[in-house]
Structures are given as C-alpha cells and as structure tokens.
Image (tube, rainbow, N blue to C red; front, side):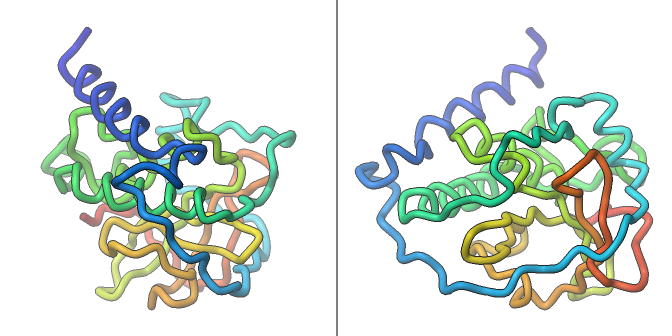
Length: 212
C-alpha cells in the first residue's frame, strides 16, 4: 500500500472513531451542543456549468459524486448529529496541512481527498463529506459549493442541507455557520437531483477554487 493511501486511511480511521452520531452524546471529546436556530435555505435557480476540476475529480472518484435518490435530501439535525458535524469540521481543519494545488500538483486547480494529509479548500470539504457520509449522514444532503470569498477569490465550501436550513463547513472558519452569515457570495453548488450543478444566483463564477 502506498504512503499516501496509508496516511489517508489512518486519518479516516482516527476521525471516524470519534464522530459516530450514535456515540456523540457520550464521547468525552464531543460535548453536547445546542441546535442552531432555523435559518432560510439557499434556493437553487437553474442549471450551472461545473468546474473542470470537479469533472476530473468525478472521473477519479465516481462514488463521491454519485446521487442516490433513495437517500434523504435533508439532514435531520439532532444534538448528536450537530456535535458530529462540528467535530468533523474542527478535526479536519486542524489535521490537514494547507497547500495550494500549484504547490501540491503543479496545476491551478485539482480536487482530491487530501490522501497525503495536505490540500486546499475543496480537499478539506471533500474529506469532511466523506467522513460524515461514513458516519451515516446522507451524501445527497451535503453539496460542494463554489463561492466568492472575502478577498474576491473563488473558494469551495460544503453546504449541509438540513431540516433547520443550510449550513456551511469551511476550512477558513472553525464554526459551522448558516450560509447567509458567512459573508460569501454564493455562486453555485452540486445538484441534489443529478450529477450536475445548479446556480445560487451569484453573477460571476470563478474558473477555479485554488484557494487555501
């Protein structure tokens, strides 16, 4: 087994061992958290063009992009599930080493699962989604999302579609925030109905999300 795969499996095992929703109420490292207040959901408008780097990722990791219409389209938030989400967000943010795709791979934008322990924004979020799906959350309700950040640059976050609104996991912020409280301009996200993207109303789409 290669070194990068060994690192990835070790990281996944370490995280998964501490974030099972069924154990979240009793794990010493996962204190009970109050559920967030209900918040309005973002409204997809129409079909949008996917990023080239996402298309390449889906060719390499087809299962990570597949849509299972039998899965719930929303996450039902409980204190245990909310604690799991917060723990995964915090642990991945602290564990991975930030590294641009140009420094990492010699290309402007490449989406991966941070299998060698390093990556940029989308790699953080893709790993979080993988871990949360393995913990039992519906992948269909966790959508990769492209935004314009506070610097006016393309950035990738993970939107969780829940019964209390849409919340964002971000490697720049430790807290899980309601989407409209991030300060970002939301451009588009993965569809929950098919392997495609939908617009969120942002006017100008970045070509890449090459942002640490």
